[in-house]
Amino acid sequence: MFLGEMNIATLQSSVIIIQEYATSAGYFLALIGAVLAVQCTVLFIKNDKKNRDRLGKVLFFEALFFLLLIPSSIHHLLGVALSWTFVNIYVGLSFLLQALLIALPFLTLRRNLGKPHNHALILNWIAIGTPAVV
Image (cartoon, rainbow, N blue to C red; front, side):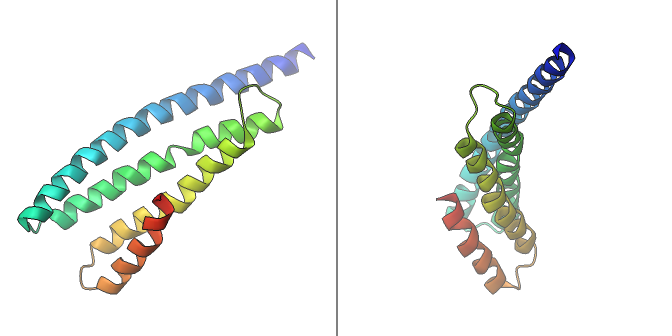
């Protein structure tokens, strides 16, 4: 019994450590994305052509931020299943849905920005990704 409890405690500690590192990295990536977004705004106002490439980088960093919510989601969902403290199934599901519903459209939109001739496809992914963020 003690060995099983020790393995659960080790698992819980490992999941928490991974979650914390992913969260910290995610915030730094979001900061980089925010700085690039401000630069995109300035380039857009100046009508600069480098805006599309920079916007792709913003979408990439923001998508990574949301993908790094997956370890937190796993921690909460696994914690509910294993009766850990300070976990909530709604938080776990919320983080998982954010990762899926926001990151995937952002990454797809980033890929499609490289094909400027397909303007309709870019607008479709903008229409999909924007409500997911809100």
